Length: 134
Image (cartoon, rainbow, N blue to C red; front, side, top):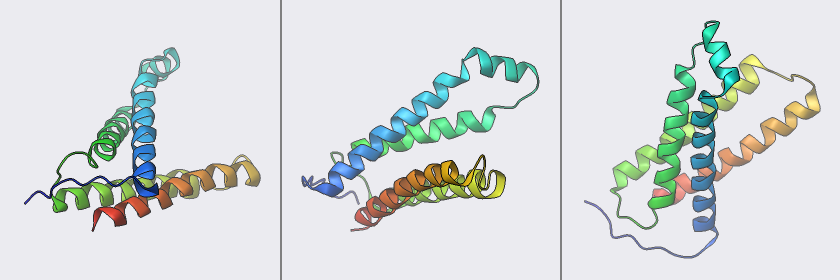
């Protein structure tokens, strides 16, 4: 059964709304870059962008979910699924892109910077996911 939405103005709500805006913007940029001349040229030479499009759509959906869920009644199992799915997908992204494919590239300091801010997003997602379980 859906729970009645109660919105409390606190740091958790601000964090959740900030993450929602972040993922909406990230998804929009991902879809927007699909139409760039560079992307079109790379597709001409055989690059497959289907995973990028799927990722951008997931980011848009999750951003919308994070923005709307404080104000709309959402069943607990659906909240749990979406929050953990985004948490796991973001962790997989970090592992795949920064650990398995580009470990310490181009140099250790820029790599640490890129990994650290993505880990901040991961920690924020974890915090918001725990909030959804209550």
